Length: 281
Length: 331
Image (cartoon, rainbow over all chains, first blue to last red; front, side):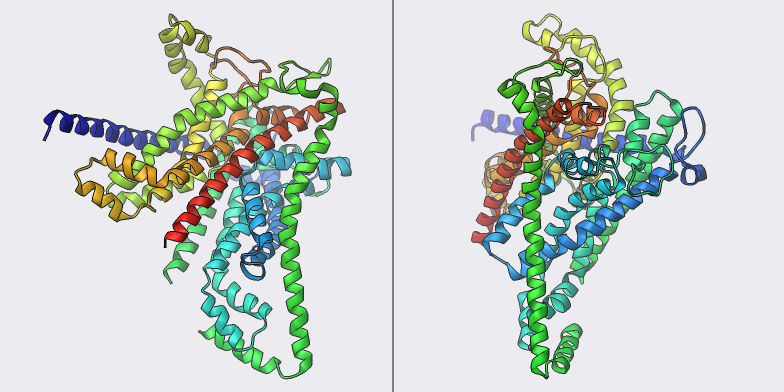
């Protein structure tokens, strides 16, 4: 054996494996650093006032109540809009229209929507709702979020229904069930946990979405429960406050960022727990 | 089992009369049509997005024509708009992101699949997948308050000093160190796409049959030779698909970039200088845009962005689809 070639191969291998170690270490280090900074800067600002007071004018104390309320409301609207349509569309692709041309096209388009830039969705809703209604509103913000929920739910519903063994459907059909009973009582029941996971992931996705809200829901310095008017929401408040020159606004921005991240992580962990539990059983 | 039995009873009880049969027929038709309508709605939405963007950008294209794409001027006062600077910024920041992000992501994926001890594999994979879900505004705020000051104080002066005598590089990395700018935005984007590319790459790396890798190891290959000669060729389409997905994210990313780009409408020779991207430009100026032409010029940029990302994402999906079909036909 040629010792020179052998040594060179080993040297090349060690160098590249060292680089892979380094890549993994530095990647994980940076990501840990981001979460660490977030905790360090955000935890100090968490207090009762954050949840009980509205966003303050610069220089005075306050909280994020109106922004939290707005975010929750718009997330609810988005979820309520996107989930039913998404589940129905996913059902069509996995049940009635399985393998059909329409399903294939919808799957492709849905995948495009899934990763389309969210700011473009915001522009679409602006053109459709804000321009026609003549003003910014929480409804428009909710619709924009619903458009982001939709593709996630479509995708997971279809995937989960396809995982249900056909023998279960056939058994039900053999007992004389019509198709809609097979879908509602057998397929949905078997895929329930997976579909719920999809909805949770979708909510996690819209929790921190900022870009589509910038020019649909806009922002509001005050508490507002009018869905037909601009409404405060956490991401846009964070954006505005972080870029402001005021120290107390910046501090609130970090606290808001921490709240969003914790919410997103809880939703994600919950979704994972749900899906691993079902895959085991 | 239990549920099937329940269904059987319910059917047996209900399906006595012809009227029950008819009722089931109606319900079936209802559900079929409702689900198909929902599926078609998804199609119409994408069509609606494209049409509304085209409709909104007509005034800008009418006023400026093709030169909209090739002009750098952006002057709201005289209403002269060109999209060259944001397009340039979008492409360059994404290029930097890919330049850093691809090798690091591949390194992490190689680490997870080949080097990492078994007990560490799951926690690291889970952590990376969770990080992919962190909203981009978090990356943005971190970039603004932590990364840019750090780059400004420590990294950028070093880069400027190092390349000051080199012909081309000296203008590419010309000072002063602003902290914010194209370079910083590219780095933030590379951190953001890392979890996306890594998780796709790791997934496709794990589809390589163990037999293939073991026979290569059995022939005396080193780990790198197994990765470069067996794993990468086997998973090429999937890896490229994953990279394209990451690129799609980077091109359309708004918040992480808006915080650190500096929002300057000019194309500077130095990548350390502030610039702008399409998405950052829309996010910063859309609500303040007055007049039809100003708004329309921003919507037109949205259309361009959508066009670019559509092409990238469609290519990525087609590649991943082809890989799926190939592995499907082999099983």
